[in-house]
Length: 185
Image (cartoon, rainbow, N blue to C red):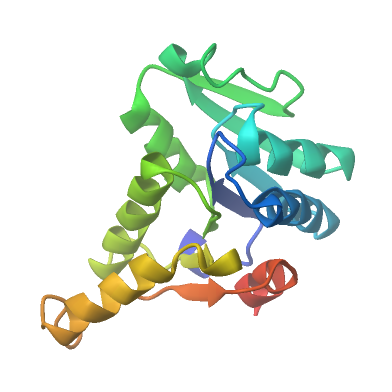
């Protein structure tokens, strides 16, 4: 059985190194971290201790979970590495980091975040569209954060830039409590 078809054991969480303006974003990160731990899965993430990244990872650790942090050398200080990670991997660059996210993960969740979160999410969606993997990709659309992206993807499909047979497959959860159950369904 290929890794793509196995039970989900390792979830990569893409999210911001800041908290955002809406408290629900941090609450969601905390719940996702706790839910991953409660399901005895590993949280794979960017290795930082700040913002939503730090909240998700710390919550998973606080609930007895295993956390793999992957951070490039140049971001160690800027994103303040979470030294308490179960496993902390320091990469040479962003490309190596993202490849390890992919290799170590069975599924991907995008919480709210900035341009880096967007880029990581879109890369996994693109690879899935091109048949490079069959792993689940879930957009945590809490407070409608990802509505503009979801609308843009619909517009791309409407305008036939995303052609029939090349649809972009992803899941959308609108409430924090839906995220892990939807990913595991």
